[in-house]
Length: 379
Image (tube, rainbow, N blue to C red):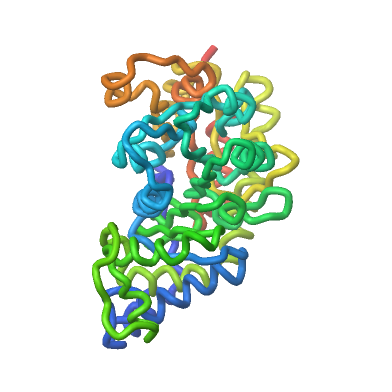
């Protein structure tokens, strides 16, 4: 008998999403910045200490707002990890910036903070720190460099909801931060994101940018009699339908996180000895960071070994997937800047394999994935 397929991801429904969407639709305001938007933003501000949050239609939108708030101009430079999703760089490139890539650590895919300072020039405007798999970068070093060189620090916390650095919530440390609620994330709304603002001087302008360059947010609060076009901006805020869906997820955040971390731990315990014997690395979490159970990945010893493992799992009806193409190897970047090798980032491009990870993954399915992986041999 063929066993049912185990997909890489399956979005989790708490059961309240449709109820809250129904309430939003019949509230008479579904265009955005209504009751569920406010509920979600208040939740994040109260739980994680962000000074101000603004829901967006994606993490990409939140990063684009960061680029506008940073006042990026053509010729400015922004330091970005090479191993990340395209949005991390694209948001700043669209404003005319030159992205300057930093290689990853040898022991985890986050940017190597010891390589940042050598990349700083008089044209550097910002550092973007990506917390890969929800595991914190060394933010003390990054914030220290930001202070020393008067640079804006932006956290790309797309994968980092409910994760911490030395007791501080990720996304609350940099001047600005961007989160994702894409269907692959711990907390999802299908598509969705959020800008977190930790420096008060950016709050007023962020609201204007969020509302298509108008001061409508002030008008909605009754602070002004009419709203006007006062700055640049775009249609960044999501509808109340998206916010209502997200709020149902937030109500179950603790339960979701407990389950996801249990799955992560079971994978780690089940595979750590096998990994050592097969020259395959498991995720490394520094002492200063926590694990938010966002994903579980393996770092194979070669691209060939990864390909063989993917095929092996496929024969067992288990879906495993690769991840980013290091942005220094992307066609767009190479056309603009030529080839720049990033040894560690390129290794993760060739060798990272993500295995099934989602809330409804059962103990039986987790065991099945572990046993299939442990039966793999490329000798």
